[in-house]
Length: 173
Image (cartoon, rainbow, N blue to C red; front, side):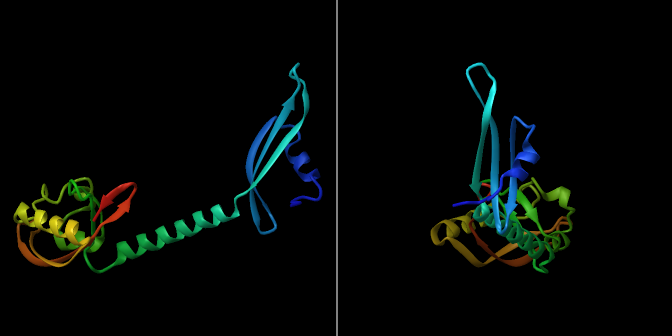
């Protein structure tokens, strides 16, 4: 379909460039524009190759993903319930919200990158192993009773609920 009735604006904008690539908006559509100079056997310019690829749907999907990620981060960090995101295999803490930090008595930099077991969270390592067995069997864990340990050494009873999710190409809780 005809996108431009007059290429004068493009020629004026990119007239001196031998190679150029950028995104342009035409009406409600977004295009990836690539301009290359064509040369003959003697390397003299003979014309230009202009390629337009419509990327409107991809750009809209990217924008929707960014908005979704922003909503998740806001909800995660302001939720009054303690939440931690950990690697399934290692127990490495990838992210925690403020409620978790407050309940456990840690600063964020003490926790991110550490394992809950190294922090002394699990009163018994067998408790986490049992939770992972249920997770692998059922795909989720609901209201799993645990005894955890805060930074100050005080133990507390809690109910854990977890599901597997993929984040950055790895399985996490």
